[in-house]
Image (tube, rainbow, N blue to C red; front, side):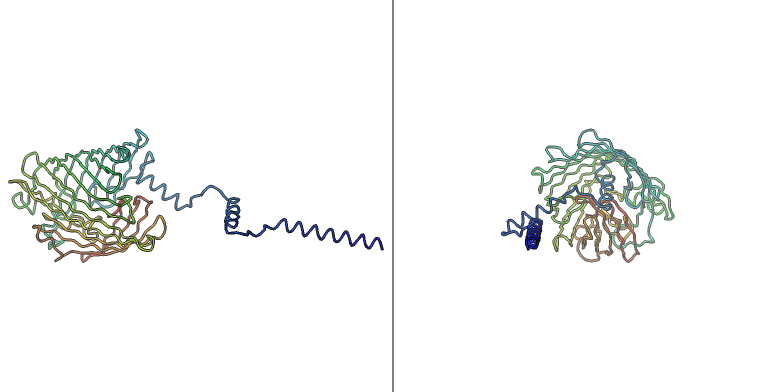
Length: 404
């Protein structure tokens, strides 16, 4: 009997010990919301580890360093010498002279034999991040630039070609007195236009026109160009933005050393990005009007007139397809964010050129439409690909900069 009682006592002690151990192993349910939050934070703290970027994030970071931020010593360079040169391939070398200031030497060669050699000193954080200075000098050679005549009603069959070489140098200073919103910019540069015999199938411009019928033909022109701009900018960056806008006016003065082709120009620009659904969609709008007038007894040369056509404005038309004394451009894009580094877009462009400012209305606009893709960082566009359709065909645009 005693053995049985002793056995029962041992079984009871073991059961009680197991129950106590199990109750200790289980986390008690919190009695309050604060306790529940503390418990959840404690569980998360057990699994904390440094953030590991994905493959896509690593790739975009490398592309941004190479194309936008210039943080690598050697980097690819795809900028063309002049619009219409086709795909360009080049390289650059960046050397920092201080924590933020650097010198970048670069060059490119395009499929249309356009050539570019350039060196730039950039100081992006002057005056406690209120100013940005760029000093640049270089040389470009454009071998087959199209000229179709003046106005918006010209024909593709009227194309002629001209070529030019241009050494240039200048500086530009941009100021944000309050670091945001209000913007001031001033610049000065010197450039020499030397027209040469072009290559390509279209006839040379000098075989169709004469200096009497085409201002600027057959001369070497050296310009001293000054510019001043004022605007309101609420975007976080002009290279990639999903909200905010820019509204500004830029005045240009071109002084010809020979006092034959001096003129002035005003550019009026308005940009607005409208975010929808927490920036998953963005409606982006742009308007740009350019007007010129010659100085007393002088003329505006054909190669310096406002123009439309190319990968940055009327994307469905050839570069410099329309030229005249004045121009109007309207653009709209519906941008759809696929992920934090990739957007798709549907776009529509419309514009016209005119000899008189009074004719810059909505009648007779040339237009195109299409779709595109953008690879970007939070503040810069790395690669832009657009497919544009117009009445003159379909064009593919490849660029390393935004449209607007």
